[in-house]
Image (spheres, rainbow, N blue to C red):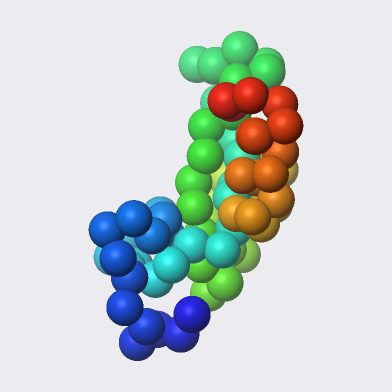
Length: 82
């Protein structure tokens, strides 16, 4: 999807502030001061913001995994809800 493609209410969108682009990536993270080690919170990212959001989380030691939205959905279906 390009920047001008319409995004429906059902389309997951990027978590970057002000971005309304469809998400392509899932950034799985946790804050060890707040979450148990197995807990995974998620941010969604478009291609443009994936590196920026990943870097933000990684600098804090929070980033655990970056996978495509498609892969995340496939894994969640096989393993139950995350």
